[in-house]
Length: 521
View 1 (tube, helix red, strand yellow):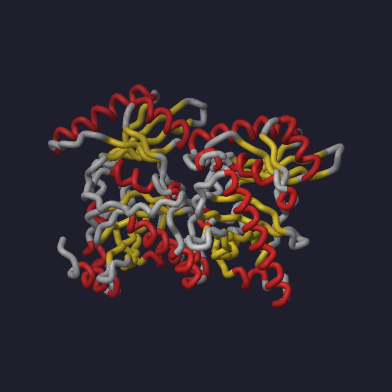
View 2 (view 1 turned 180 degrees about the vertical axis):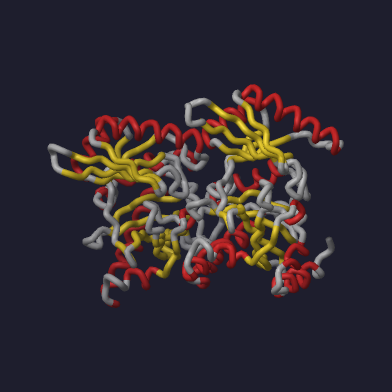
């Protein structure tokens, strides 16, 4: 018998399942990542996935391929949206090792030793790869495992993982598989799939008796053979809300926590404006970790390290509001190869040739600001800089307002865009920023179909995030980068509703005020 914590490792789960003769044929070949194993696997499979043994949400996964002929092979790896090509295996492996070390250092959701797994060429739906998520639960009455939910996850065309957190889209299983199977075949394949995952659940629970709910990610190859891609011990199932509310309620009604305990109620939190503490709430929930920029306390070591990794960061007070005291810091290399360090506060820009000079001046500037404001909390944080989308040459971000309704549900009552003053680094209305409809700003960067889907995704993030803070209203500041990835820049626990008054259409403002009057401030 092994513990829940031990079984979290992908390697351990694969090891347990491969011991069953009935299941073994559905498990992709998996080895620890080293030079010999990677070379052997590429000779056998041509495409493999390199992934962290303790990774979640598809974080840190790299697809590696071999093409060309034996005399002139070409090696490629694909990570997030970037591809790198190599003419020799040695160069591929050296680059891959550097990449995995960097990922393990910077990605909080990509931990543990790396593995290499046989690549499965997944079926495609509308030219997008997809896999199947099956939720399996231990019935409280019969004490038997049952498949309680099944849906398809259609991946982003530019990415190698299908996760919702990586822009994947949940779609009904019948809709997707109906593209490949007749109605009769669909029923047969679904029954076989449910039987297979129940067998896997039984095998895992024989090894760890703490399990109560599992999420199986199954990929189909071109012969419509199912392959186990991953088993999740703490599966999220809110995506069923979008595809099948009845199934979602069925899963929720039988949910007794991931280890058999009653679900832990989120305690009501005092309104603490600390950016660090508000960020901590998000990072404790894997659903949101990928949206949180790396954040460290301000000191010389942390600033130097983060500038090396990100080149641009924001240094900001832990508990001020309205963008006050925010400083943009950059490290660039000039054409002659020398270093240049800069920081900007409000409209002033300072430049230095060494990091030591930069930090000395920056530290003095911060201390002076704290003294002038007579600040009680004198802590500053460093946040990874996001290269935001622009509107007419000016950066912008989005404000999402989420409020509690009288029936204690959470509703996204407004989304708007905030465009920065051309001479400033913050978008706040109080810092000469301008307010626009979010759709108007995003429409400059995407077509109507993608725009509507993107707005829907933002609303989902807001609706799922709000319960973590257990407040009647929060404002979420979202920055969108050049790859259209959303980043949670800040969570505001005293959101200003009247910024929505700047919009010509007062529909959102009216709803915000309507709900605001339901609660005491």
